[in-house]
Each structure stands twice: as C-alpha cells, then as structure tokens.
Image 1 (cartoon, rainbow, N blue to C red):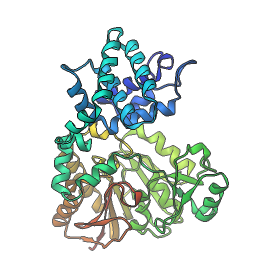
Image 2 (cartoon, rainbow, N blue to C red; image 1 turned 180 degrees about the horizontal axis):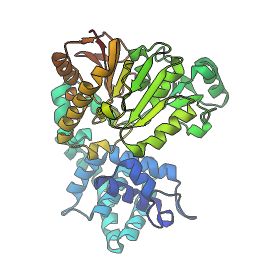
Image 3 (cartoon, rainbow, N blue to C red; image 1 turned 30 degrees about the horizontal axis):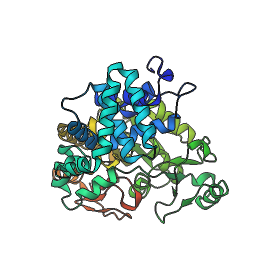
Amino acid sequence: MRAPNSSAEPIRVQVARVLHAVARGSSLDQALARHLAPPAAGYERDPAFARALCYESLRHGVSSAALLAQLCQRPPKPLIAALLGAALTELRFLATPVHAAVAESVAAARVLDSGAAGFANALLRRFLRERETLELQLQPNPSARLDHPAWLLARYQEDWPDQVEAICAGGNQAAPMWLRVDPRQGSREAYQAELAELGIESSAPESPAQALLLTTPVAVERLPGFAQGRVSVQDAAAQQVVAVMAAKPGQRVLDACAAPGGKSAALAEQVPDLVLTVIEKDAQRCPRLEDTLRRCRVSARLVVADAADSASWWDGERFDRILIDAPCTGTGVIRRHPDIKFLRRASDVAALAREQSRLLDALWPLLTPGGRLTYATCSILKPENQAQIEAFCQRTPSARVLPLSLPGFIAAGPGLQCLPGSLDQDGFYYACLQRSD
C-alpha cells in the first residue's frame, strides 16, 4: 500500500521516507512501492531521479552517516537524518547544481519538520565549506572509507583479504544491464542488430552464449519483444547456470528455490523438452515467478512448498538435474540491492548456512544415480559457498565434485566464485556435484 498523499509530496520528502523505511527494516523494493510516487505538478524532478537518489544514498549510506556524526552534536530525528543523508549523497555523487540540491533539501526539511529547515541549511552549507577536511577525516575509518558495514568488512577480510577494496568498490558501483536472448525466437546476433537500429548499443561476450551487455541501461519497455519473452534481463553470472547444469533434452529438472524464475526460464529456452518442476516456498513471490514463466513461454509444474519437505510435494520419481539456488546473504549483488548493507546482520550468515545445509541434505536423495546437483548462491562469503559444499561432501560419500570453468570466475574450493565486477558480472558461486551411487 502506498503512503497516503505521497504523490503530493516533494521528491526529496519521498526519498527520505524510503530511506527511513529501509533503516527500519523494509526492503528497498517495498519502500519504493510504498513511498515513491510521481510528483505533483510543480515539483522539481521525475521518479527516475528519486530512484537514483535512493540507490546512491544507500550505496553511500555508511559514509554519509559518518559525515553526519561529524557535523551534528547530537543525532537528528530519524526522518531528518534520512533526508540529510540523501542531501549529502546528492552533493557528493550526483550532478545536481549545488544551489538546487541545498535549496530543495531545505524545502523538504521544512515539509518534514518546520523547525528543521534552518538546521538543514546550516549543516549542508558547513559541509560545502569544510568538505575536503570532513572527507579526509573519514579515511582512518575503513567502514566509512569503503562504505560497507564493519561486520561485513571483517567477513571480507577473513574470506578475501587481498580483494577487500576491490569487492567494496564493485559493490558501490551502479550495476550494468545484462540481457538474455531467447534462441527459440531468434539469434542473439539478430537481436543485437535490432537494438542497434534503435540506437541501443550492446556487446556480446563469448560466454554466456545468449548474453548481451548494454552500454547504457534502458527501460525494459524499449526492448523489442520483451513482453513476448524474446529477451529478459539477467546478469551474465546468473546466466551461466545453463552451462553449469549441462542438462540434456527431455530430462527431469528441479529448480528448488525458483523465484523470480530467471534461471528456470534460461534453462527451458536453451534446452528443449525439459520436464521442469519449480518450487517456491514464499507464496508472495509466486506471482512474479508465474509471470516470468508465462512471459518466457516456459511450461513447468509450479509447487508452493518448502523444497526440503519432499514428502509434501515429491511424486517419487527422481530428477536428472537439481538446482539449489539457495537463499543467501546476497553479498554478491549489493551493487543491485544496496539495502543489503543495512538489512543483513552478521548473525544471518550462520542462520542461512543452516538452511542451505538443510536443502542440500533433503534434496540429494531425490537425484537419480549419475545425476547432477548444482548449488548456486549470489553470495561471496565462504561459509555459504565453498565451506558449505566441502562439509556436504564430507558427510555425503556419494557426492562427486565435477570440475567447472567459467569466464571471470576463480577457483573456490569445490566450486567457482565470481567476485562483484569481474567481467562486469555480479558476485556468484557455483558448485556441481554428481551422484555416484
């Protein structure tokens, strides 16, 4: 439900409400849906600017909070703090003229709290006067300098000590737009030429076979045939699931954690006649999953269930291929979902690792002898990835690790890890296990 009268509020008030909602535990998608609306006549910008400001404010939220702490003797009220964090982000990273950014942020403060306008004006002007000194004072604080929470930096330092700064830099960048072309409806080369005729530039990597990388992101409405499933938006690292699973025409395939459906669709588009079962535990995510399968013309049995509770849904016939795209911290896709920095906690890692182990143990018996189970996450944390698969193999004598090779990925125990930004891809992990009994 959208916040009452949100469309009548200035853009920066709406942005402050979005950021405040995330700070209180809402996902960014939920907060945008509730608080962001097209501006009323006479207001200054369109929703695209507001969305960009929300994303950038979360990408740089740790350093903005540190700057506010330097500029304020006592913390502002939460909504005003959210507004000022956005204003600092706008002054530091966006191209808005300085006088406009300050004036419009002060006006928004007046809407939120009539007594806060003078405070906001003084704080922002002080930042502009002392910016160089204030920014330098952030440098000794790794969390503020790298714009990531301290617990996550500690985890990166433990797991990837030589890549910490590169990982954080990748997470702080806006993500590129990757497409996946459906080969059933035309070649990638023909689609790329069609884009070029529309002035949409792209490049085609050698792998994945159906991927295109747009030079500049565009609205999906501009993509020819999007509504008919000719093309989908999916990161290159996620598209590699087709190569890793190596499914063959006509095989029985299980996607055990299927929403939003991109990997199932990629498999069905590129491997004919799969007998596909897709499972999603969260009923609220199923409408989007159904929409994806329908748009991409994928035939599948859709089950709303806990995949690990096989007694509630399994028909007793084993699968040739199983995909566990496991629930995880999402640390490999922070560039796409910057709210992860503020929604995840250190305790989530162990809790998610337990859930991943539960899925592996429950679904392995459903695999036919000689069949393959692919384990995937969009995490870069070792307890969710290589340590998880190493432990599973130790307790599962019938599991044999299959070698993998993917562009941009590096060896990570029994599997492969892509770190954020490698070949412009998201952070992603794959391991492939064959049942030997």
